[in-house]
Length: 307
Image (tube, rainbow, N blue to C red; front, top):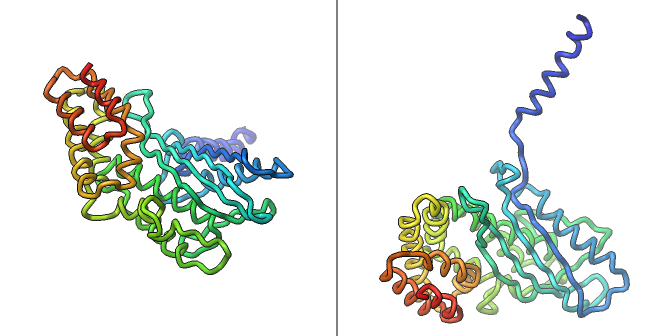
């Protein structure tokens, strides 16, 4: 009996652990670093760089929201080293793709797909990749932190109308202190309005009050449209049409907007698939006309809706 009584507290503790809510970080990132056009004497350095970036994104708590393991935002990040000006200094490009599950299905849909065409950073395998949300530490940690908050903000926008505002604000803080930093030699013009397709303009497009239809459109497209498509396909198509109409109006207001280009590059095939099975011929013609006007690059994909 005494042994049983002694075991009871331990059993209670174990049951408490089993019943406690499971917590996980927000991102489930897969990072791949390549260096095909440069010479690196120690190939393990690229592997460690890749692991450090991935760990940085996946193990840090970026918000105070509790994410279940299955709710983590899937992110693929492809980093290509293009030059090594000096030992420990790198120039690179980056492609990011984030996905989101569609409610009630096994389908995962691309939310964002955009490229950072040029950035530079210092990296040493012996130095931990550190980050501060309110002050500059290094260009690499600033870039990773900026995109972490941006991906989270956009994802929150798909679940609640303008739901990502707080995380856009944090990305803005990183952009501001990185643009004015004098801590290191990592001068990076993409933090400033030096070119039309860079980090500065991506964030400004997403937070411009005149272009709010982009963000509202994310909620309409995903939460009101895609998430109910299996149960209510007709109503869901109507919600997607409304969302795309708002996005089109914002894109026409500011032609060449970076986020609009990233959105259509990620969604053109999916938009065509959504409306291809519609029984409403007027709706099909309307979506083809609208999308061909606002996204002529993918006009051939939209034309398949009418076949």
